[in-house]
Length: 252
Image (tube, rainbow, N blue to C red; front, side):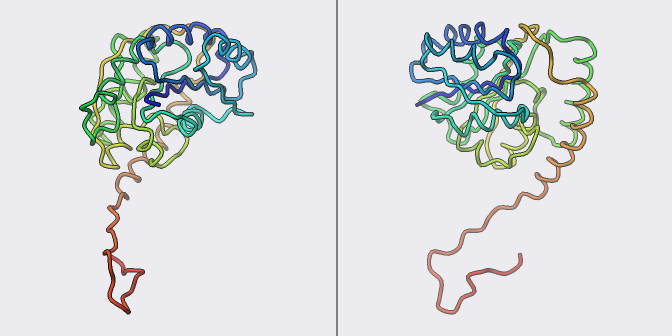
């Protein structure tokens, strides 16, 4: 399979139907695909409505977490279960238009795609959020760019496409989805950026507040900076070793 679309969903019952229909329309020309909807411990009818969509869209898959684990955990579960060599993620609240998917995945799915390209990151333009949310995001992105030097304007955008194998090689931690450009670059992959549109939430309510993002963001930022600085290139063992050689190696 070529493409797996992974969408984390928590109490997004109002958005299930529109989301599936928009993805079906946007990706109609991609025959070899699957849509993995990860119900992250929802307390509403999200899972039931996903099952209903499977009758008319057999390429839709449902994975459920018994309790909410957060967006990064849901994305990680979906990517682990994916059959596609390329995965694309977007948020389940319809703020990321599914019509952006073909353009986002194109650099990775092209016949002449560079072997060094690991991630295509969406960057939102004309964000349809409150002033407070836009300002907080702008400040957080500036601080992150200064600390990590990841050359990315907007890592909070849910629209991302990447090589499945490269993603699964990354260190997993809560909120890692906000640092994918820095983590892919840490492992030596090239990063591409695509400007994408943005719109108001389709239904339901946001799962985060600015204060929540700030409290976890500072800690995560320090942790990611540490991961980048601690990255070591593994030196392969020679093909043959003389008898009596120390195969454990010494300290570098």
